[in-house]
Amino acid sequence: MNLKIVDENWKGPTKFGQLSPLVYLVGTSVEAPDWNPEPVCGGGIHFAAKAGDWMPDPPANGHLIEIEPIGQVVRIVVRIGGDKYKAPAIKVLREIRDLDHQDPEVRSRVANRLPEGLLTAAMMDHPDADVRWRVAGRLPEGLLTAAMMDHPDAEVRWRVADRLPKGLLTAAMMDHPDADVRRCVANRL
Image (cartoon, rainbow, N blue to C red; front, side, top):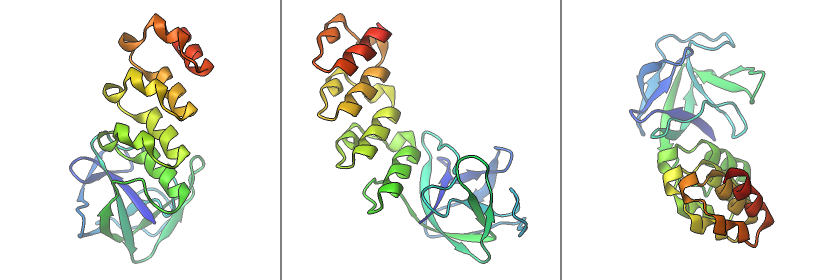
């Protein structure tokens, strides 16, 4: 599965963090005007060829898309965070908005990279524990509630307790049955 992150206007970042003029709409093919087959950043459309490859952090209202490279694929070695790839053109296959891929590594990466605006509290009930943990750590503060500290998954409970807005923390939470929740609350009160 080849993945790419784009912003809310379906544009991707460039080598220098600026927005590309290229637009990556689902169903379209996009060609790089500056194709360079050298294994360096720039000169092509960059993407992750597998779940563990390097990708930039997603913008809050951005999109995670699955793409198909067109033409020569060049691997770029990245020292930290896995490699990345580039091609002279790509076809945008679909937007990924769910966390139900059959490969657990892909689910984990999607949970880590899904734009914040697409995260929901319901995702903390996903059957995959890793997905629940990652969503609990990234869910926007405005969606966190004190009731989530009673989630059946211990890791979700302490992630929520560690991130719950301070205005929602109370001394009564110090009596929570979960020692990790009590510790998180005590450190933040």
